Length: 77
Image (cartoon, rainbow, N blue to C red; front, top):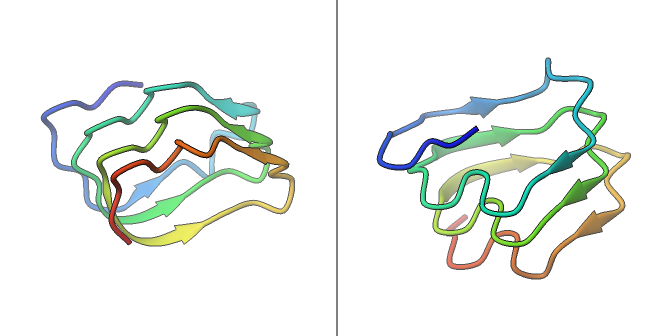
């Protein structure tokens, strides 16, 4: 999923239960301006996946075991 140059309020991915990872650069600079809700199946968030986003609240699943140190690079919370 690639949302460059689109403003997104709340990004709710919770119904995508077959996803185990968020790929590098997947939502980079996507203008998320609200809550980020990830599905319980997510185990990994890769490099720059949500970099340069404006996230109000972040809801992380219990299964999450790896978050790249650059996953939220230059993002505001």
